[in-house]
Length: 130
Image (cartoon, rainbow, N blue to C red; front, side, top):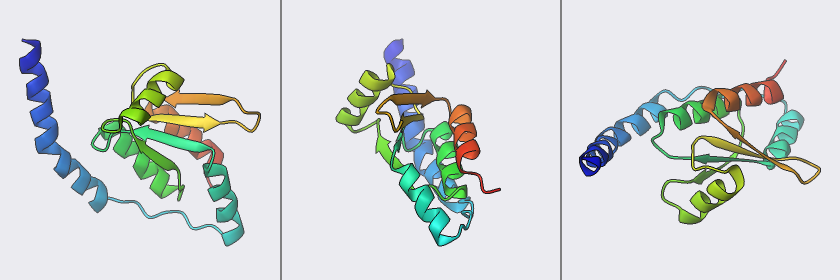
Protein backbone atom coordinates (compact mmCIF):
# COMPACT_ATOMS: atom_id res chain seq x y z
CA UNK A 1 0.00 0.00 0.00
CA UNK A 2 2.86 2.38 0.86
CA UNK A 3 4.35 1.77 -2.59
CA UNK A 4 1.06 2.64 -4.30
CA UNK A 5 0.70 5.89 -2.35
CA UNK A 6 4.29 6.93 -3.06
CA UNK A 7 3.89 6.07 -6.74
CA UNK A 8 0.70 8.10 -6.93
CA UNK A 9 2.28 11.22 -5.45
CA UNK A 10 5.45 10.83 -7.51
CA UNK A 11 3.36 10.63 -10.68
CA UNK A 12 1.31 13.62 -9.56
CA UNK A 13 4.50 15.67 -9.04
CA UNK A 14 5.81 14.64 -12.47
CA UNK A 15 2.55 15.67 -14.14
CA UNK A 16 1.88 18.89 -12.22
CA UNK A 17 5.50 20.05 -11.73
CA UNK A 18 5.98 21.65 -15.16
CA UNK A 19 2.65 23.48 -14.85
CA UNK A 20 3.63 24.81 -11.43
CA UNK A 21 6.97 26.08 -12.77
CA UNK A 22 5.22 27.65 -15.76
CA UNK A 23 2.76 29.39 -13.43
CA UNK A 24 5.66 30.63 -11.28
CA UNK A 25 7.36 32.07 -14.35
CA UNK A 26 4.15 33.64 -15.73
CA UNK A 27 3.18 35.24 -12.41
CA UNK A 28 6.61 36.65 -11.53
CA UNK A 29 6.21 39.79 -9.44
CA UNK A 30 8.06 42.93 -10.37
CA UNK A 31 11.03 43.49 -8.09
CA UNK A 32 11.35 46.51 -5.89
CA UNK A 33 13.74 49.14 -7.27
CA UNK A 34 16.30 50.55 -4.88
CA UNK A 35 19.02 53.12 -5.29
CA UNK A 36 22.24 51.43 -6.49
CA UNK A 37 23.97 51.93 -3.14
CA UNK A 38 21.00 50.45 -1.25
CA UNK A 39 20.79 47.47 -3.61
CA UNK A 40 24.51 46.86 -3.20
CA UNK A 41 24.03 46.80 0.58
CA UNK A 42 21.11 44.36 0.20
CA UNK A 43 23.17 42.17 -2.14
CA UNK A 44 25.96 42.05 0.43
CA UNK A 45 23.53 41.14 3.24
CA UNK A 46 22.04 38.36 1.09
CA UNK A 47 25.43 36.66 0.86
CA UNK A 48 24.83 35.34 4.38
CA UNK A 49 21.53 33.70 3.34
CA UNK A 50 20.89 30.39 1.57
CA UNK A 51 17.49 28.95 0.64
CA UNK A 52 17.20 25.17 0.60
CA UNK A 53 14.30 24.25 -1.68
CA UNK A 54 12.57 21.80 -3.99
CA UNK A 55 11.82 23.29 -7.41
CA UNK A 56 8.11 22.37 -7.53
CA UNK A 57 7.22 22.70 -3.85
CA UNK A 58 4.33 25.22 -3.65
CA UNK A 59 5.72 26.71 -0.44
CA UNK A 60 9.15 27.12 -2.03
CA UNK A 61 7.53 28.82 -5.03
CA UNK A 62 5.74 31.19 -2.67
CA UNK A 63 9.04 32.00 -0.95
CA UNK A 64 10.90 32.51 -4.24
CA UNK A 65 8.13 34.86 -5.45
CA UNK A 66 8.62 37.02 -2.36
CA UNK A 67 12.39 36.99 -2.90
CA UNK A 68 11.77 38.29 -6.45
CA UNK A 69 9.33 40.92 -5.18
CA UNK A 70 11.95 42.17 -2.70
CA UNK A 71 14.78 41.90 -5.31
CA UNK A 72 16.86 39.59 -3.11
CA UNK A 73 19.68 37.64 -4.78
CA UNK A 74 19.64 34.81 -2.23
CA UNK A 75 21.54 31.66 -3.16
CA UNK A 76 19.22 28.70 -3.77
CA UNK A 77 20.20 25.10 -3.19
CA UNK A 78 18.30 22.11 -4.51
CA UNK A 79 17.69 19.74 -1.60
CA UNK A 80 15.60 17.36 -3.68
CA UNK A 81 18.08 16.11 -6.27
CA UNK A 82 21.46 17.19 -4.86
CA UNK A 83 22.43 14.68 -2.17
CA UNK A 84 25.11 16.95 -0.67
CA UNK A 85 22.65 19.82 -0.21
CA UNK A 86 20.11 17.39 1.25
CA UNK A 87 22.72 16.08 3.71
CA UNK A 88 23.76 19.65 4.67
CA UNK A 89 20.11 20.52 5.35
CA UNK A 90 19.56 17.39 7.44
CA UNK A 91 22.75 17.91 9.43
CA UNK A 92 22.50 21.67 9.95
CA UNK A 93 18.76 22.15 10.24
CA UNK A 94 17.94 18.81 11.79
CA UNK A 95 15.40 17.69 9.20
CA UNK A 96 14.91 17.61 5.44
CA UNK A 97 12.00 20.03 5.21
CA UNK A 98 11.69 22.82 2.69
CA UNK A 99 11.73 25.71 2.31
CA UNK A 100 14.49 26.36 4.80
CA UNK A 101 16.50 29.57 5.05
CA UNK A 102 20.02 29.23 6.42
CA UNK A 103 21.00 32.48 8.12
CA UNK A 104 24.71 32.93 8.89
CA UNK A 105 25.06 35.52 11.63
CA UNK A 106 28.07 37.88 11.77
CA UNK A 107 29.29 36.22 14.99
CA UNK A 108 29.68 32.90 13.20
CA UNK A 109 26.43 31.37 14.46
CA UNK A 110 23.96 29.79 12.05
CA UNK A 111 20.17 29.75 12.29
CA UNK A 112 17.88 27.53 10.24
CA UNK A 113 14.46 29.03 9.59
CA UNK A 114 11.71 26.69 8.38
CA UNK A 115 8.17 27.40 7.11
CA UNK A 116 7.46 29.68 4.17
CA UNK A 117 5.40 32.11 6.28
CA UNK A 118 8.20 32.56 8.80
CA UNK A 119 10.80 32.98 6.05
CA UNK A 120 8.69 35.54 4.18
CA UNK A 121 8.01 37.45 7.40
CA UNK A 122 11.74 37.49 8.22
CA UNK A 123 12.66 38.73 4.72
CA UNK A 124 9.98 41.42 4.75
CA UNK A 125 11.09 42.75 8.15
CA UNK A 126 14.73 42.75 7.17
CA UNK A 127 14.54 44.03 3.58
CA UNK A 128 11.30 45.97 3.02
CA UNK A 129 11.88 49.44 1.65
CA UNK A 130 10.32 52.08 3.88
